[in-house]
Image (cartoon, rainbow, N blue to C red; front, side, top):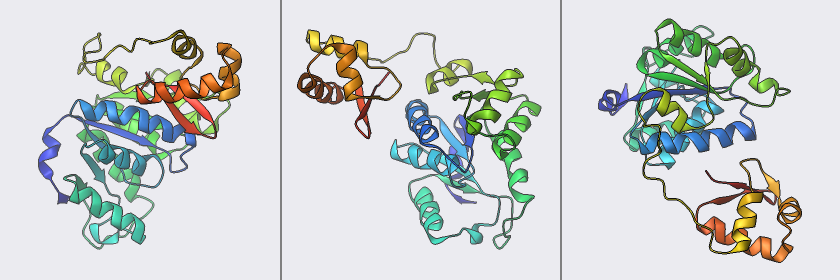
Length: 260
């Protein structure tokens, strides 16, 4: 163990997924984590590449605390980049936890074994992105065995990276969720009515039209021009205004989404 053990006394939620994180999976992480952190939730993951480490990064970026359960000893964190990040986790008041001796190397059995700790420490497990055979599904099954809640994020039906999530949902083993608020609500940590949300009121007809055109799916400026009926220059200027108001966000490549 290295770091602040006291954070285990706070509500903890496991956020797990594939090492081969997609851009959609990364977006899911950065959408869910801040809403959990704002309520004082401690995130728990395995610090592996992909979804796990992204959960830890997003948690620290949001000013929260995270617990990383390692599948090896504390002296076996490699490569150097991962070691530096692990040190950052500790420096920012979070926790590295392992059941293995300092010099225990990672092995085929150690990672599935550590998943039982991830499942057992938490109120529930959220599978953010998982193909068939993913280790995240082991964590989900263990959570079910322990009587914990399991949640899964849906993806496109053709996306193999979400086949595991869809199996959990289809078998009734996981509740389909699309936001951190839904996870908190299912766990009884949030009321049905969102508290503390400020309603954005459009200040012009242009803002109104663009808000109606924007969705949570990325859209190019050309598509927004077509849907809103506004000139491209008006759309670009209005998007910048909406971004400053916190209700629109650029995703890169000239695409935009509505921020809920």
